[in-house]
Image 1 (cartoon, rainbow, N blue to C red):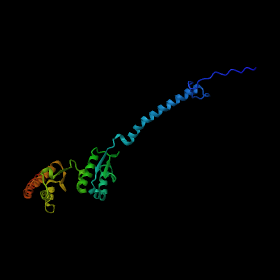
Image 2: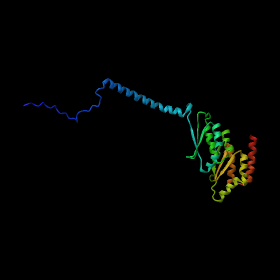
Image 3: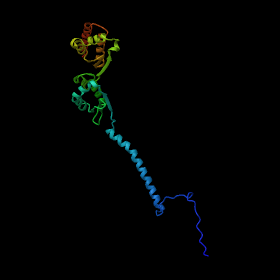
Image 4: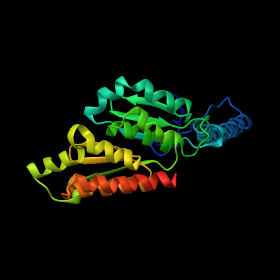
Length: 245
């Protein structure tokens, strides 16, 4: 009888380790590829680290930080600002060297500094100029903020002076305005300010001292002082201001 050849011993495939490697690749080639992968990872990390610096340089040309400012526009002032946009755009761009645009989606005016902006207070002046127009001041009055220093806008409500309701509030507004706006014009000319009456709010444009004088006259009218006494006091104030100048 022919004797059968012995079978090779069986191995447990579950316990055998799995080796995933190319048998034709030499060990030196494998180490070289690993070193190349590490160098690529290091170069990629350095490139990612340099990206924020490049982005910052593009956002801040010349080493200056770009500043933004937004001025909200109420719905009742959208039409006036659209019709007078070029009168607002030219002084902001030519004098202040700022970038300005109207954002119709968010209903606001956006201002931004650029590489040509030299005045550090240009952004604040531009925002005050746009805000003064939105509050109701004429362009020729609001543009004085760009040309003169120490001009700003102060706002207060009639209710802050005295609690008035109904017809009493209407009569107080009428005393401030006067017949055909005579009282308001007299206060403006005597104190060298500009006044806007917007419902129960009073906006005053001028210097600190002139705003204080105009506010005192308006408060006196709200409290019930006769216009004649206010006129006499304003004449004295006007003469003092003329002597000082």
